[in-house]
Length: 220
Length: 220
DNA sequence: CGATTGACTTTGACTACTCAAAATAGTAAT
DNA sequence: ATTACTATTTTGAGTAGTCAAAGTCAATCG
Image (cartoon, rainbow over all chains, first blue to last red; front, side, top):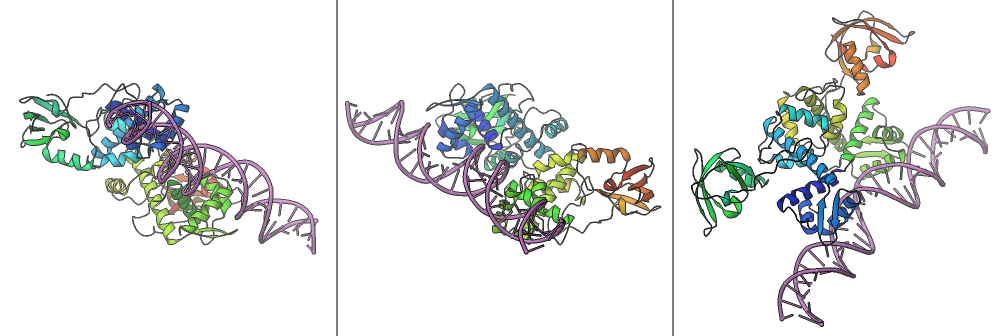
């Protein structure tokens, strides 16, 4: 049994790997993500390498092995199913479920997970639009296109918000830019470093480029 | 924050204390309940005493302080609400929820607990009939009368099954002696070391004294 | 009264995880 | 080719929890 610490490291490595595929995850970045000092990450990653969950190159970084990825995906599946469950069944706000799920993801058995999955009717995305990894196999590759990449006049659908901080999620909520919503891009001026977008039936909002980059979209 | 290990020790001390009130819980018994060797229990209890959660008499045993009891009750509340939730909402069998709840009781936040409590309509007992401690204050003292104490001819209601092992719970299920059921005591022969009981609408079953003692009752 | 027994405590050692701070290795700049 | 900078690794130490086994206490029994 992997400890919840190990599960956490693997999940973090997976997520960092997603952010920049085809590169090793450097220890500084990993330490930051896990919330430990770099030395601790080095030590842990060497242990993970010994258990065959990651491959590690000194001064290069870490990458998940097939086995490590398997485990990371299972943790992520639990995390995201729990998030959706908390929103749909217990009525929590989507801005607060991430923190709750951080704990629960390590405590849920396969049996309970299966019940939750069934109750929610085999969902494919969590409340933030993050894909829920299937029980077996890899998840389908997700769109990497964000609001910041959209052209003026385009009509798109909000697919995913890739920042779990409650403040940002609440802001997105107020704007009406929650996943599933269709919106029109009114302007995207690289010089002004901002994007103007109008969610269907709502008022136009202006996002800075950094914020816009966190809102992923798909063709409407 | 109390670690889940600490929470577990406190819960265990509380439960052992319930089994024999007004005595200290000896370290052997506690170690057994927690699943560690006696030396470990001694070490841990001394640490708990230092944090003011228990009072400890060397070679005597341990007892919860007010603060320790407070915490133990909170853990027990989580455990039992989770059990009921797993049965009522996720449809798990009452014989398997105890094990599930052992993990979840340490991972559930107050906010989630409150939602579960509301969803279940502020229940007062879990699937086994064990009382759910209130959010604040002590639980009402529960009946200590078991099937083994009943007289022939009595009509009683099953209140509680005080053995969480799946095998026993499944057996109780097959007999139809689940909490809430009204039954008639057909015989209680101390010499034969057994009790015959007839659940309403079901067939008569005979329990050995040890089994009968685990089935707590109240007047019908 | 010893001697025995059984429960309890102590000791020493080990695993898992962590940090602070010193050492090192590349990388870039002078 | 030094120097300086930054990320990384190493080292030493600490916390939390655990076990095995040796030691201690107190009750009981002959």
